[in-house]
Length: 163
Image (cartoon, rainbow, N blue to C red; front, side, top):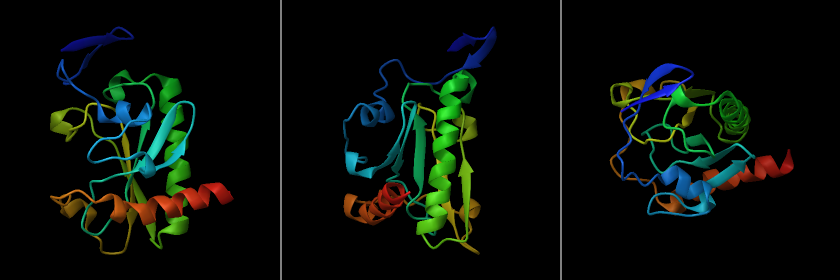
């Protein structure tokens, strides 16, 4: 489907019957892979939560998304982009301060060939460790359980509560 934004054709791939998991969480809902207990930071325009999809050496990654539904970077209004960026920065500082990692990486995907597989814009914030081989590995096949995610979410919420 082609959508015109600011007079430019933008390619979207969201199926007509798509049930957006990000919109569900943003509205206070939960599903089998994301719970409200995973939320670590919220603002008027964006929210951040510990992801259930982990990489072998980078557990506890956080996803930051706009509250409003925008499929990708192409159709993201500036105000929502600023809201996401502000939370990405805050989450990156919190991860660096609480996880014992030696760095942080962020990434964001657009369209299937850009490795996007959820049709709501989001930014990954990864804890990084020397020799972790993040870009040479794939995510784990099974999702992290609520009990596995809880310590990461608690660390981050505690950090933000004390800030």
